Image 1 (cartoon, helix red, strand yellow):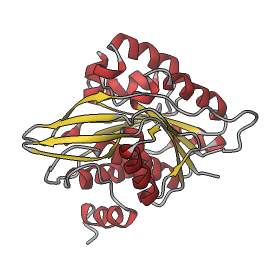
Image 2: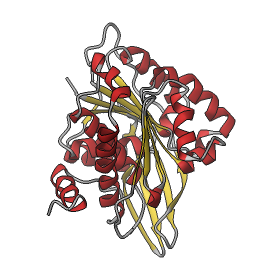
Image 3: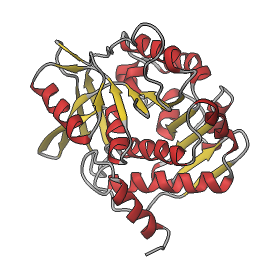
Image 4: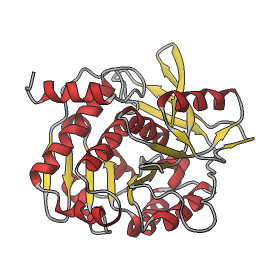
Length: 314
């Protein structure tokens, strides 16, 4: 039985940095799944990968990372591609050639009962995959904590008004939300971090994390709110930083024993000190990732060492 499940797109990132073009597996859900595996978590990815050379690259990456690929995730269509253009500061802008379609949950009662199911990005908002994803939520929602990262890309996901309506429909099933101030700006929602957090709390979330890049992050429950500074690292590029943060956030919550079934109800009761510790852990993962090119989230050993350095323990 997998402790964690991630549902969403896998693709090949083509990254243009000046005159240099590189390719590597990507997609926010794939990055989160790989990040959890690098943190030594047992994780299954429900996705769609083409049966072509690009798909083979992704399949090999997942196998090397220790991510279990859910049966039926490979089909005959071309593998999805994301074209990323990096500016002089290492910030990425994207265009996509993408197909969203995932295997359906099996008939009958769930054989898999993961402690947490992570969703978001294009896979949660582009059909036909979005409808299949909702079938998974109905299938597993009573057993699993559900986390969500909108990772807004209006060019492929649709207009802001459409996304806001879909978020309203999703939120009764969502326990944990991670969103950036850029996501909120694109959605036309409140961009002040505390107000952004309340936007999701009012819709039923028990824990909300709003990321602000170099300005850090805000973590909020219905009972408490804290601000955590970012980790001061030299920025090579920002590719995958939010996904590394998301993976560390999930890992941290698991270590706090607040995921899955009845334990999930404890999310709202995390103390201010607990939120601050969780935020520092997640921010450190993002800091490690921005300090090196591409989406390479930290291992548990790297993250533990950096936490000691960050807190002054070494």
